[in-house]
Amino acid sequence: MDPESDNLKQAEQNSEFDDVKLVCIDCNEEFIWTSGEQTFFRDKGLTNPPKRCRPCKQAKNRRLEAVNSPGSGPRPRVEVSVNCARCEQPTTVPFYPSQGRPVFCRSCFLEMNPEVLGKSES
Picture 1 (cartoon, helix red, strand yellow):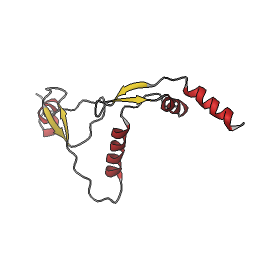
Picture 2 (cartoon, rainbow, N blue to C red):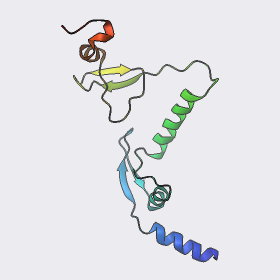
Picture 3 (cartoon, rainbow, N blue to C red):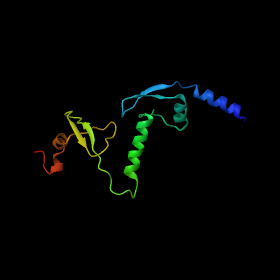
Picture 4 (cartoon, one colour):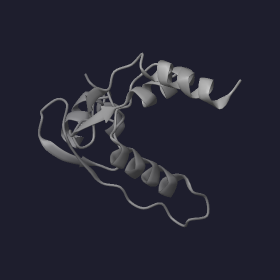
């Protein structure tokens, strides 16, 4: 095949998608998911759209690299501010919460899990 027909095919494939505006789950800013990126996702078999804008995705990757790199010394202490899923009070947790999983303050967690302190619900 000649390069010109390859470029034409690529242009036809890209035109089957329209650019889509998405909202980043980290910074709540809108970003554009381009038709070319959508084609890439489809070609790789990825079914879910991206959740983060490019800067937030890069920041997340840097955090993961720092945490997972062997020989980098002791892990840095993480403290993330969140709202309790039960009482909605602000609290901090020593981990990065997973999307879709509830995070509880210490009081609510212990109330729901008394066995953690060795107490039984009688």
